Image (cartoon, rainbow, N blue to C red; front, side):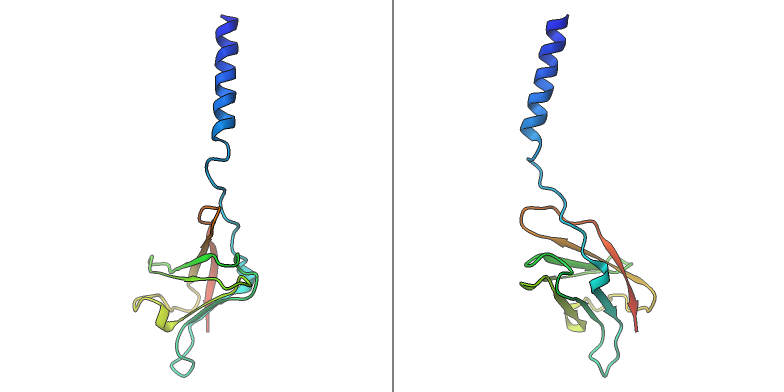
Length: 122
């Protein structure tokens, strides 16, 4: 019986070591403090969503989702900044001030990050 327990333990440990690292880790959360969402006006060209340098990983695919599930994506620049304008958003994207958008990033070597919430401002 002890041999069976020992063999079972060795098999479990071996399998755990083999599969640990087979799945990429989550990407880090975007830095919500560096991301803004402005409803904008006709004069400013409409809604603008942007991340300053370091908001996400350089070259990451950034996905922005409104409260209704409408999404838009863009690619971060070499400094980890990004921008989306009215023309980049679906026509039914929520522009309501006070509502929140969710921002995630996905880059090479990691799975899509947890979402951060950013309020839509004027």
